[in-house]
Amino acid sequence: MGYKIEFSEEKNLLLYEIRGINFNTVIQTIEKRGILDILENKNYPGQKILVIKIKNHIYAVPYIVNEKKKTIFLKTVYPSRALTNKYLKKKNEKNEY
Image: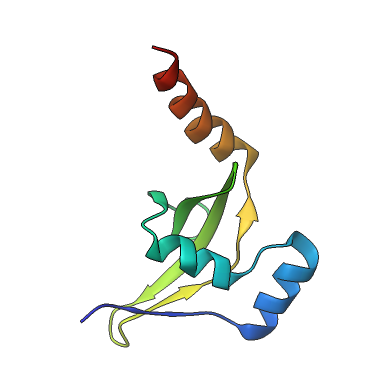
């Protein structure tokens, strides 16, 4: 059985207000196999970062896995210029040849 994705509903509303994106959009992207990469979070041991593409932007989604409960808890979602440059530039370079 797969893992259940969880998040704070309060944080979900706040993210939509502040950034115009929410966890519902992230989950839809994940379900459409929109994950570009999974990174270790160097600043927070035990936490990973999903790298996803929504429209023409790359977003970072830090999360924690709870093996016992079989859950993935999404912490936040934010646009990342560094990841956008890395992943969109890489794709654009491939298309040039």
